[in-house]
Amino acid sequence: MALWTSSEAVAATGGKLTRDWQADGVSIDTRTIQAGDLFVALKDLRDGHDFVAMALEKGAAAALVTHRPNGVAEDAPLLIVPDVLKALEALGRAARARAHARIAAITGSVGKTSTKEMLRIVLERQGKTHAAEASYNNHWGVPLTLARMPQDTQFAVIEIGMSNPGEISPLARMTRPHVAMITTVAAAHLEAFDNIEGIAREKAAIMDGLTADGIAVLNVDIDTAPVLLNYAAKRGAKVIRFGQMAPDWHLKHVRLAAGSTVVQAEAHGDAILFKLTTAGRHFAMNGLGVLAVAEALGADPVAAAMDIATWAPPAGRGTLETVTLDPASTDDTLALIDDAFNANPTSLAAALEVLAASVPVDNVGQIIKGRRIAVLGDMLELGPDEMAMHAALANDASLEQVDLIHCAGPRMRHLFDALPDDRRGRWCETAAELAEMAKGLVDAGDVVLVKGSKGSKISLVVDAIRKLGHRKPRNEKEV
Image (cartoon, rainbow, N blue to C red):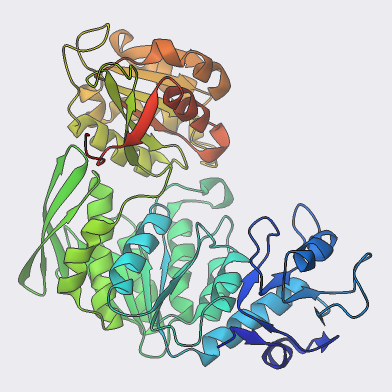
């Protein structure tokens, strides 16, 4: 069955056809477009209309446009609309309206994408599941994800993000989830809000889209939990709470080990044990929330608790890998934790806890003693108190277990200056400068965490460390 026929697309958008067509997918990028896709010519940094001819040459079934672009044949399969983004939104709403799927929407300051992937993995073992690609969670990512949803989908997981006030509610109303989950509220994008309570209210707006019998799954361990609970009460939403302070899905104990997390919890008074094949207390919390969402959607939470062990974090979000510095020596390795996709004080504290729980290897390398090393880039979009927030990280209890901290960026300079002399590694104005020193920053036996906001480009250090040797996933068996 086609994902979209031209007549269905016209009914959804009110556009005009040049000829009939049917599409098996929806794409906004000619680099990844597949034959049979409907190409949506969005305007962003570049105008998608400039790529319509290329999309059709690559086998696109049709293009969603405001006009026939230059170089495109008069008889080319086009759906012509006044506004391409609004038409994509219309397709998303139509896809949602025709679906019989049980839909979950996820937001939060930290962990949206990882949690979305956890939920996708546990649900797809229990029914046909559709979920957002990558971090497609903004004003075009959400309607695109909905527009791609097959009619026979049984479960769908939609990620919803924001950078500024007022962005979540319209996306939630478009999604109309049966279950809405808020992972946490933290000082991310704080420069766009007066305070963290403002962020909490914006996150709570995901409940604006809940169906009449909708359920809100909320983290009640956070300071702004009352804001979320009050919002749910005003919306008349049923609430399921998760966390150490929660009566519904209660987190009892978390044990971090090298590359794994073992979680003991209770759900409605019944004991639950699950394991994640990556380390992180924040992953344990989100995993508990995922099980709560799965049950709220009608899935089997016991099966979900077993299947969640197959999840691994996406690249740059806490992945653990081994870098072999000397191929001639199987012991000449270091452990690299790549968490360079994003950062704020909450997520950085969680990452430092993982580093603190790691076990370096002694008696290898030039330094002999294995070390826990943090390589930290600037945390961005924290607002007027950002320098103080960086300096305050020096008081994080996990840093007592970290041997050396290298920093990059003008904001991280404030942390660097606040560190004890024996913990200071190197500081550079840019991540690129620090990356050039990679060989002198680390040694065999070390466990190395690299974390910072994406805009800090701290991922350059990750790449530089990888290039010191040969990398492989941490769970790959030795041969």
